Amino acid sequence: MSDLYAALGADVLAAGTVLWHAGNAGPLVALVHRPKYDDWGLAKGKLDNGESLAACALRETWEETGVRARLGARLGDVRYPVPEGSKLVRYWSAEALERTEFTPNDEIDELVWLPPAEAAAQLTYAHDVEVLERFTQPASVLLVVRHAKAGSRKDWDGDDDLRPLSGVGRTQAEHLVDFLGRFAPERFHSALPVRCVDTIAPYADAHGAKIEREPLLGEEGYWQDPVAGLARFRELLARPGLTVLCSQGGVIPDVVETLLDEFDPRVTGVPDPEKTPVPSRKGSTWVLATDATGALRTADYYPSPT
Image 1 (cartoon, rainbow, N blue to C red):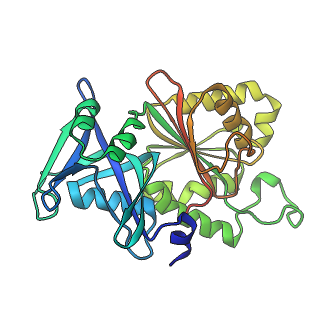
Image 2: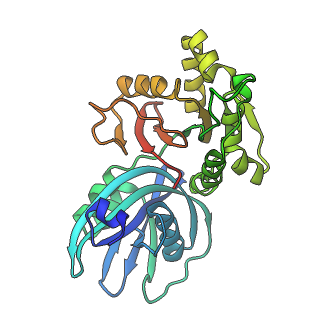
Image 3: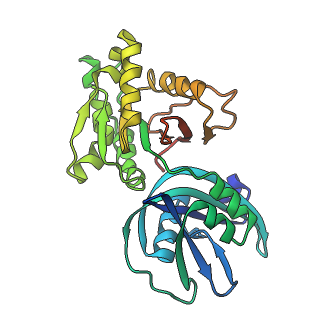
């Protein structure tokens, strides 16, 4: 059993999505019908060798529905027994980006798009209903990335804002290309230090995107005027769609903790969010999603881009 299977305490790992797109009267979610079992469920499937759960969720969604999607909030895990032992399925919210005409096959013969309440009534399994109940159409999603590892401060004689990424940091930045690609961000912002800009530059450059500098959201600018810094952070969080911000370890825990104290979001990726200080490892990401009222609904922590 691999480290991932052992860490999650499962003999079989799978991943899936609550796939959705915006309808005229609210979100519509996708359900698939499997003729072999005559059941209605969410798009999902087993992990391939060497594949991450997030990548699996997107691949299986594409294979079962013909829809290219981008991930949003994590919606939790489902566990149940199978002949091989214990199975774990991890789910994400996923927004449809590109839809092709659905082609029935031996595995999936029907695809329907329904309002969440109607979808819940049609789902075959109670655990799928529980996953769907955690879904909320996001108004905005902000990915808050801490910069990757940089060279040693004590060995750097120049302006600290110019201290570059280390070799390990450049590798982390390359790994972020795949990680950020699963969320398909639309806008890119960074604190002023070069190590922040260079952490997200590989993805932004590959997509011809400009990185907007944020002087209030680096350690120096933020702590000179925390009120203004937090206000700017809220502006980025409120922007519709999906935004990336790369900042520093002296800023991220403060702003995330402030938001967690203000709202009661579902938090994943932290063992006990009530007792654990807000983490912010180098190369890590917080995925923050708000609802139509502007309230923070979910806060997912990814300690590594891999």
